Image 1 (cartoon, protein in one colour):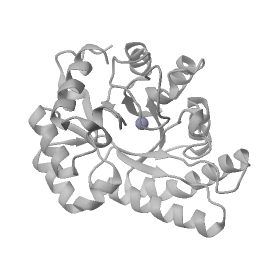
Image 2: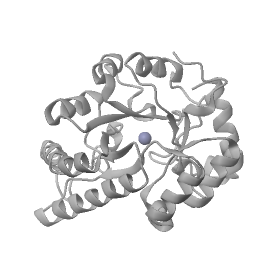
Image 3: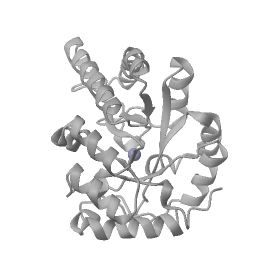
Length: 276
Ligand code: ZN
């Protein structure tokens, strides 16, 4: 297992962690903190403009670990599914435009009014299959991020690493997985499925699970403040062959989003050195 305590090369900041900042500010802020990798969200990328963002990232010699996010494949009708696919193709192009190592996919949940989760999962499979040729041509890997089952209805009906691995097995090249500790830490099959994922792990996200958690979406904890065995999970992904970045992704409306982003980056770095 890598010793990260004196090597800041492997920390990346997901821009959701420093939500108050524009992409320009986040790139500047990370550079000032000595952080050399970043994972932007599409909204702030679009606000900045892809060409300008690419230029800024190059100027600061910043690695782009991922673009967040594509997905949301299921829809109530064909027009909706086509619109989702078109938007995903644009996301792939944006990822290529900034040299992102992958496009993270939150695959989507139940279409409005539906109770057919098996059908939603088929729509996800079909959406991925339809998107893959464009992604392969653009040279952008797609990272399926399984989400905790509490999001199955509204965000992602792929809820375990086993499901994501099954999709990779079925659909082949160009597809991988994003392992986010927040979503998978509880899974009794985690060790087996991380080993099975192997080189298909292309994105690794860290934060922590607070007890109690007061909001299903916006109450993630800083690494070390919760119950996730971060070192244990990193040991698993590294044993599986992953040697990439630890992307810090913290949605925290009641705490970290209220602080000065510069302070947040300082704490992220300290925890990265000591508990990640
Ligand atoms: Zn994530």
